[in-house]
Image 1 (cartoon, rainbow, N blue to C red):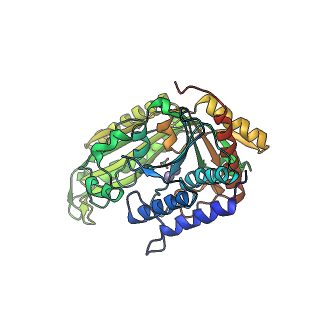
Image 2 (cartoon, rainbow, N blue to C red):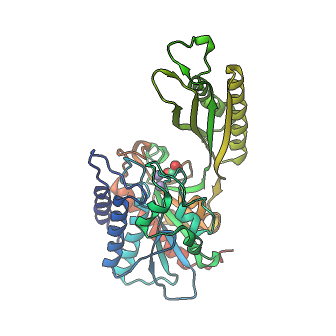
Image 3 (cartoon, rainbow, N blue to C red):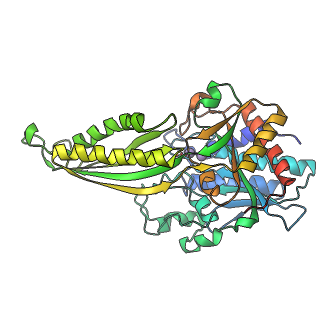
Length: 416
Ligand code: GLV
Ligand code: MN
Ligand code: MN
């Protein structure tokens, strides 16, 4: 069975072009017209090999190749097609295209697996619009993704209206849940989005675990006042206090974290946001990620204490609210071992590495036996137009995926 890397690359290019924006950037933000067009292109690829995909109640696309034994659970593979703004060509898309390529290779070879194979494109992995993603995978797992019809997105639109582009209705979301015993395993091929594989010249990473992610909304309350007549000593400048705290975040990670611990303040809103007003309020998001929940909680505590100290000495107040929480997830042992055996048999150099980025696999791993295959991101760049993965590495990744599927097909693990 042959993986056609040229075909995979041509499809990655076609999807990228379909996100072209007037300002020269490329984005397929979830639910946007570019995303809807990209999904249609993807479904058409499947139709061209005689498979009619369906769209479930959560907007997930599921393309199913029937197996020879209808009583067996599905081997699921896939990822996401939505991007961050001005995102790259590979994040998510590569896993969807790899699933398609593997199916096309199987169909071309006339090879029928015993288990059905389901290629899934998850809805809104990135969560750019509403601040929290992983919607499709959460629905598949039967979890409440915390989505409400009245949520307002980045552009001021209501979720109830936004999701109409997918023909979705939030009240039907629970119907997308899959029974635990209907999935043999889930395998996601993805770009590493870090620099380890590229730096070490390794084409494949076998993922050991995915970092947990906690997000917090922090509000610092000072006092808005005239920027010309309020003397420096009399100010309660919320932005200055927030900045003092933010500047200490790297130090908190250095003190309480380990090699892979990260913390980021990635948003900032200043109220009233006027050049001639001392900032009265500052609202920002803090995110903490690590492979250990204990460390994440230690940093949370240290961050709260540091913020309290800064606010007290400035005579200001604050709120610190956890808005989402995902604990770290190890990958399933038999799926991980099966991926590793496949890489070894193919003779490709590899490393077993953790994932700092989150993926739909973080959710899927809580219910279904889940594993991930990484291919290198050149210079570790991702969530950027400069994201690049070499064609040769994508080919190797697809070969590992195909071999892993065939091995999993011959195994009889119950999903419990
Ligand atoms: C998803 O891409 C994330 O790790 O933020
Ligand atoms: Mn991704
Ligand atoms: Mn991403």
